[in-house]
Image (cartoon, rainbow over all chains, first blue to last red; front, top):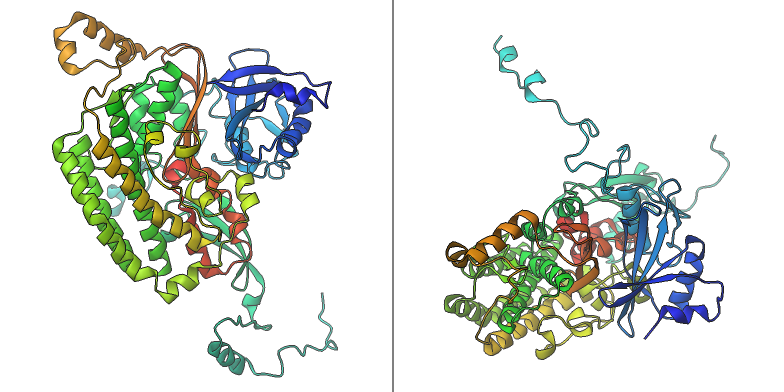
Length: 170
Length: 426
């Protein structure tokens, strides 16, 4: 079974904080070390299958956004979670598309929903929302009902002359 | 740029165009290339979001060179309803009907996946009868989903009859759900720590009758397709996904098993009672459209086998977990007991307060791994509810598959991935 402590052999400068995700191993790494850790996990420890990537808000003020990479070793069926956090004023984390190509859309989704920027991503567009949408809907400060006027909607039928019966009577 | 008149253009001048077309018609594999034709240049074609073969509102932008796809780019978000945001603003229980609308072809399996994740977070375990009923629901949903996938793939290629027959068989599953859950389509059958009602003898009889007739129905479809030269030639050898790239992209489910990996969460991380049931994990090594079709086709039989075993082994007893603080009380108890009335009031208004923590649980749904990553801050509402949807990950491989294929193969490749946009767009 893989333990995050095994990463320390070979990279002594590594420092991380382990967390528990429902019995599986997870660790928060500083963003400078993400690329190195990801490459070692894939090449040395066999975490070839990328299951999921997603953003979240942490419950702390200091490091507001968190991106989690959910990995699977398809030989041992072990699941691990790789986490990286960033501050609200500097929402940049390294993109891991060059390690797992499956990160592409998932990182775009996290960018769309939380406004996290993935440095080195080949195609940093929004995933779901229109490109000119000015907000990041999954942030906790975005209201559930949306922001009025943020997406242009079709005119009300009363103001549309083609639906206005009074105009057609002539 | 002015064209230099002195450059010779001898390539296709010897044979007149009409003759070349006639020659090409005699041979099965030739592609005619007309150098003077304006369509020879690359062009951009927009497929979808409203196109019958894109299985919903998938939009694919294609760059074409003649009839060959040079590049393809998918555009998602036409069915984005913000379910992750909605989930954060309602109690765990209130979200169950919304899970039906994710993969609307197999709603019962989505209910199970969500409830299992919440139950893992809260530490609830179902009695064995409840677990068996959940397995039956999941496998019925798998049959229903695979039937549609097969029928739709065949229809996209032109075999309309198979689609009608597949829909006919699915209709019988809806009738079973009608009796079993009370609803035909969006069942919302599961509850946290149980399910809406127990399985009745009538529904068991209906399921048995359905499963007894299923081999004949499948044989009919196989007779239409498996010796059909058009079907075989249009599906074999196209849409090939190399196995290492499939892992890299996060493919799961029948698509990954069509690439030769015997990966199945029912085997690898057994949940419910799957470790007590006997079934095979179907794999194919050809990695093409036909391989993915064959995996689904054989999985229907395996699912039927699982349901038979569940019906035979179905234990008697309770279907609800015994944890009055966390599961919604029965209606009869609410009207007669003060304690249950208080619990019901608290659960409906404030939700089950889950312990602080993070949890992930995934199940092997019909399309692949469907899971929920829940982050709880101790209140009755989830802090973050991430849906790991298989269609989203599987669709990501689409542009890789489309590169270099012919325009008529696009519909077959999309059909073989079996995307459901409700799930991919969340």
